[in-house]
Length: 264
View 1 (cartoon, rainbow, N blue to C red):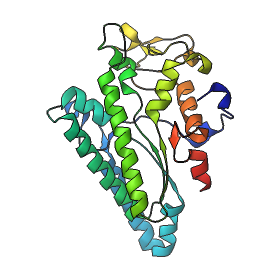
View 2 (cartoon, helix red, strand yellow):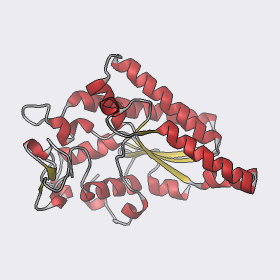
View 3 (cartoon, rainbow, N blue to C red):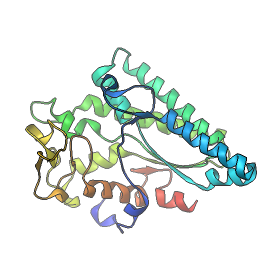
View 4 (cartoon, rainbow, N blue to C red):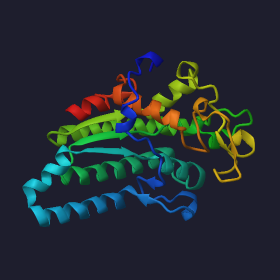
């Protein structure tokens, strides 16, 4: 996305780019050392609220809520990290097939509950996160992880194409987070970034060998950094991603962008 094509920062008020400790499947990062909420459990909570509304309001008013609502889903990074670093007994093909199966089934649950408008964000170029660059002597991107991110985007695209034929009225925008981030990493200056490898906050090599804490080193100007910590973007990086998803061309978000989805 060209720098001059970003028309407004207002889109950042509509879309929040966050990476939370959640998973598509039942994998648990680091063998259970983190508290994670699988997408399955979040959908169960959604279904519970849906059931309460159904009991209070009846079926017709209840179905209007999910059918007119925008559901935003950004998930998959933790599953890939878990598979790659801790649980890679499966082949890559089997892992991606399992992840696709889980993702599709969970989307179907939401569709059966009446959801029809989805803003989906695929996995960014996670091999270029500072935490993953540590595995390279020269601080280069971990390309095998990036291959997983690209493959997962392709899987999500095929899922959404098929579901749009199966469920009448389904509308979606699929944000290609890999293309959005790699475009900035390969060409940072038009976006006013000068540091793509190092985290703004952390310690030691690439400021990526520890998490943010009160004793961590803090960069003097976070706006020129793409990454805030080991994994997550800075506010400037998140705002750029939000605006790209909201207004961007089909290279970055397809078949329509989030602005068009909101009006659909």
